[in-house]
Amino acid sequence: MKGKHIFCGFVFVSFLLSLAKTGFGVEAISPKLSFEQKVCDLGQVGLGTKNTCQFKFTNNGRAPLKITNVKSTCGCAVAKLEKKEYAPGESGTIKVIYTAPRTACAC
Image 1 (cartoon, rainbow, N blue to C red):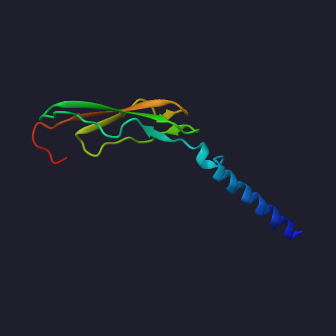
Image 2: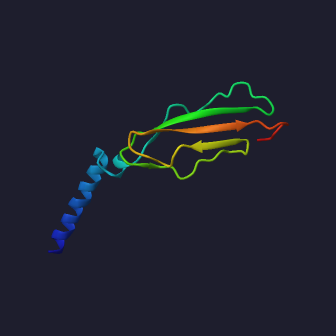
Image 3: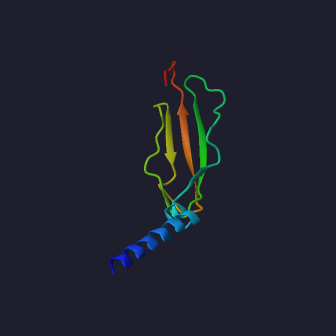
């Protein structure tokens, strides 16, 4: 009887592994974030100027995308997100506002 349970367990685990390989596993139902562009050229940036850039993205996955935190690497830039959750196929924008300091900065 014990051998039958081990065999059934092995078959079940093999089935789960085959699902993962064929695209029906956890990875297939996860959100997937895709950006239209990953770099933004702000053009001429002078002391004390304000420049903006937008990063458009799409959730190309099959599960809702939840963004919990968007932050910049320095105090000169502020990132703003329209909302925190995006359904599969839904697009959004992260708006970045860069305010150059009035004096030279070591950002």
